[in-house]
Image (cartoon, rainbow, N blue to C red; front, side, top):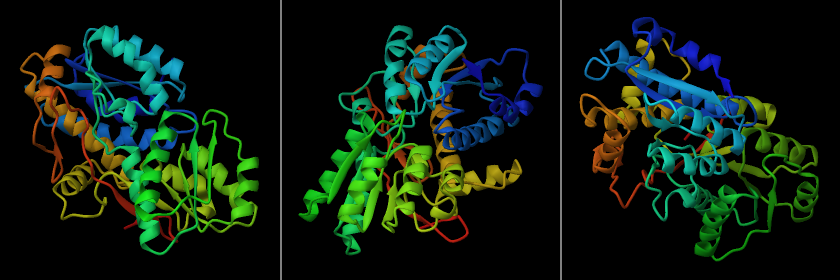
Length: 370
């Protein structure tokens, strides 16, 4: 178990103003090191931006928020261990912003035993949506919806020779199911569908298979390091296929990892464009960022900000002395909550979250355009 020092540094102003022990504590375990670190850091920065702003405005009924973040290195056993550590602290009223499907699944027994809500896991897995997991409250759209939207877009612009590369875990199966729904609607089949081990990615055989079919586009699902590493091998093999990936890679860190291969990459998005000031949510993000002197607003930062906003609203509704039970009850009652032009509709039988999906492309300067 490792405390992520950079996250704590981001909350230095919070800690300076708060008592020795913050009155409202939120727990997080995610891969602050390892293959998904770039996106995790961006997203946590967005959440911290929201929490810090709320604290600077007096907190919630005079009570300040503290985010306690532990590094699970994107390893499911460590995610479960960290969740147990966080849940053992009675001051932690909710868990928040985990990363990865197997990692979040590993946390489920802890949630059940501790009767603590997990808000906004960064996973689009169906297994965390249907049937409803009583302690898991999703915010982002499902990965199957993202994959389907990506395939529909490619077919809509005349691309028909499409390959799919996904992890051999539940997140990959969900993405593949969404892609297949898109293929079926367009009455075509993928020219290749391959899987890889996300913990130990190896793409030699996959690249050889792709060379034989020469796809126009490749839907490449996986962690930032896996997709960037695999893309480098694809390019080294002489293939110029359009690379398309999902929103878990909508971060500056991923674009940096892609380096010269980033230009032209299509990335799904589950929140509005970070420069779309017509969106009430984005307008709020930009206002908070300007006040905090945060210059680089990324899609991942926007998502973390929105996720924090959902959790804070639940804590507000949980009464003057929020605890695990009251936060859980508040979440289950959050129907028609306006997140800023997007609506959350939770109920005891539905913790699905949003359905918003858009697409962006990396331009020659490394910025995302829509």
